[in-house]
Image (cartoon, rainbow, N blue to C red; front, side, top):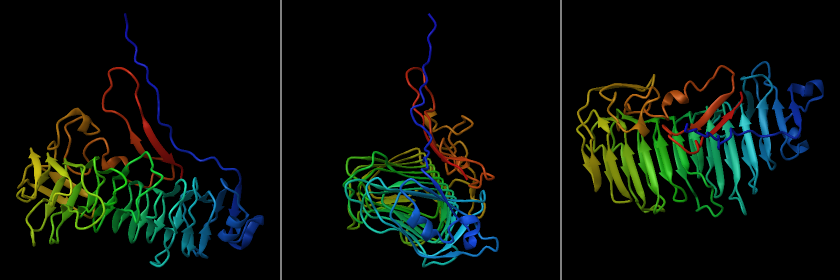
Length: 392
């Protein structure tokens, strides 16, 4: 009797239907609105606002308050529209605000901000293919989905999925505990950060995969959860007073749970500490198959196996590469194999969440998948696939 495999695609790529399209063009050409604010006033929930980039590169100079579920896109494919002003999103249960192709210009005072906590549900903000100054979506019950963006400053968010972005620093941080919980974890995948990645929220488990960063810091965690720091490249040539992977309660909210630190490539200049990983007991920490150019020294209680120090590796923080002894040095289990099905390469290009899934962020003005999860193997039953994407 021949066995058959039934494959069911359980996860669907995310889309958002638009009720109507409203156009914004310089001087209101062709009967369009002349300002983005006027289009917002005229729009209804679910509408799409299509903005024409000005031909001379100048900005729509206006501060915006968004109090509806709206999608903002560029009229010219992959050319960003320039809004010089603050963008404040008013929260509401079920509100979804999406920006694709927004440029805030090089003005550090103009940020994308959710202004308050959401009551009775969640507010969702989607930022795709944007050039931004700072992003703050830390109020309770707010989700940020962000991909393919360049941020000249910081990204603070309380919950969401952040993939394939370049920024100064990133902090998953909640000003207060969520009351309308999302079913998804905090996921930080395939990003570049100059000044590190931090988890300082206690509402969700966190997953940090395949980032190129100078440090990973955990100042809070959700009790009784499993959290993962896997296949990151942590490169700190300047040194510091704490380990490049640092876990501490330090008086901040949340402690407990389990943190798995695995398949990371680490290099740092020894300054006040020579530890690769440091913890003060905030969680149950397990470290395995990590490789470092430094001697593999740890501080605090850590369950360890198969970690290696004094590995010959070369790091490049201009082209975001790591080469040498990280190749085939990660966990040999099938679940962690590289995209070519060879053994896991420690660092940001190893495993199924490889950096190469997300970079280059410019897909040549084509639709882009910004998140995809499939199992490594399946012998019977149902294949569950989860994915999302956006069009440029």
